[in-house]
Image (cartoon, rainbow, N blue to C red; front, side, top):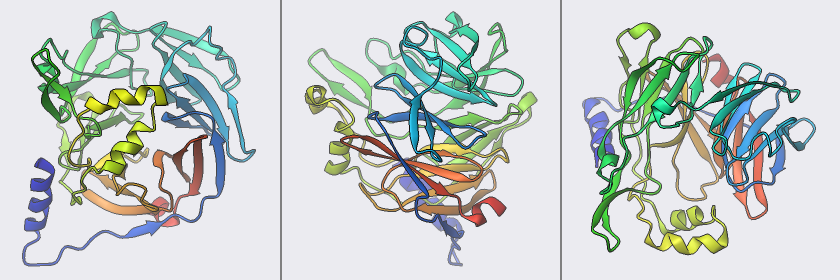
Amino acid sequence: MQRLVAFLLVGLAACGAPPVAPPTFAAGPAADTVIVPVRYISDAVSRADGSWVVLGTEEFEVLVVDFEAGSVTPHPGMSRAEIPGATVLLGAGDTLWVGDWGLRRMTAWLPDGRRVDAVPTPEQLRGAFPRARDAAGQWYFELSAPPGRDGRGVLDSGAVVRADTYLSRFDTVAQITPPESAEVDRGNGPRMELLVLAGRDRWGVLPDGTVWIARVQQNKLDVYPPGGAAAKRGRPMADPILPITETDRQLYGLRFPEEQRGNLANVRFALLKPAFERAFAEPSGRVWLFKSAVALDSIRHFQVADTAGWRFSVSVPSYGTGIGVSPDAIVMAEEFPGGTRLLRFARPAESIAN
């Protein structure tokens, strides 16, 4: 309902004159295709040599994808003894940070496979893994309130928390809107649970420590400058209202092994698709919002925005999920029974110059 209201308000604001939509630039055909033997890719990091490092969370695999060579190889040095449960993947220059749920630590790796650091997850944050790191070495975490016995903690806002390099000082940068939830009763009394396929705020950190948050309910961008300066609030952008269909629910189930899909019978799904599914920032501060679409749509879109609003869109001829945007490329992941097909598209020239 909040998204519908925001959409109507954007339309009403333009009363008296037809709204002028920003231009849409089309990416060309996929330049490269590589098959990755994992079911689902949660994180991807681009490297200066044009390769990408991806994380297959169900297999706990960290893989190097070289589009030029058409190859997929395990990241050197990362044995199962070193990283038994890869969960988080962060890029910081040429260094790759990998979070491991088994050993509860972050380890830093160079491209040649040398491990150069290891940092335990902080007890002060209940063992949470960092989700970003700036050029000064500060860490950034996303914390949610404990759900509690009745689950009502999911109604409380989360927070982006910043820590110094040594994980000794912590401060809250911004609040995160709680995802959609609903009350359910599974025989033990009513309980609040998060809705599957509901949207959530996406955020990241620029090298200088600027925190950006893409607000899913308002479809807008807020920016929090370093040093405690006042936040810059973006304007809500128009967004189509798309229902979650039976096809969407079935596609979601395919992400799980067949023997686990019976557990999905009692899952509560959201009614509407989120305004966007993922978000990626450029060094300039522009953010690429990977938009929701009708299930198996053959063309997907990015809405590129800053705090001034919607700048332009980019269409990509793929039914997959956007997993990364680099200075010259867009990478999409198409899931299929044999794994995940990664496609690399050249960015439209207009998306680089604008």
